Length: 240
Ligand code: GLN
Image (cartoon, rainbow, N blue to C red; front, side, top):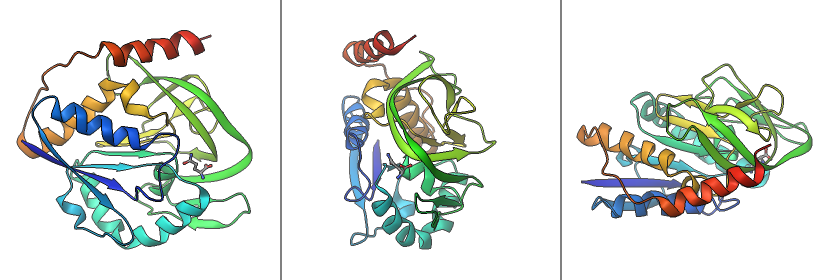
């Protein structure tokens, strides 16, 4: 079996260890004997999007986001179709905001998003920074997901959230919701990187990709002791 992981704009969207998510996905596949090709998709390296099996979009500065928004706009339809077809996508922070209708930056300028989802994000006074713990809505065991958030943008929507905030801020610091899930597309504010400390979420994405491509129903298990030790440590340090 073979997976093509598309790392979207690795040169422009890569904050707070986001690259580690791609390393984690690749490594967890390779440990299981699944071949992986990581394809960097960016301004000067446009490759056919529909050849990807799993998509990762990291977070970025407002400047990086702005550049990406205008470039990726022409792929809106294709990205939307892939999501509708069940392609797994993990979009973090600026990447998550990018999938919505618009991002209103700190100067009040509208930066149009892809508009695949009907939410928007507004930059408001005071950044939402710190370690974050949520309880996931995907039915994953353990229930917790841990990460680090740092965003000025507040996102508001009625879609399924990725989880309930137990510690930290999440989408907007108000409604205790974090992230968004639609089909196999996950938007979230959790950096960190997210996946190495949450191997259950990494495997969720890998299995969705393999299910879509090969009809696979189950992944072989790995020894995740170090990963869950890191996960537990975060819970211990930051739980109330
Ligand atoms: N610029 C966005 C914000 O501050 C995204 C930041 C990020 O990706 N961490 O809301």
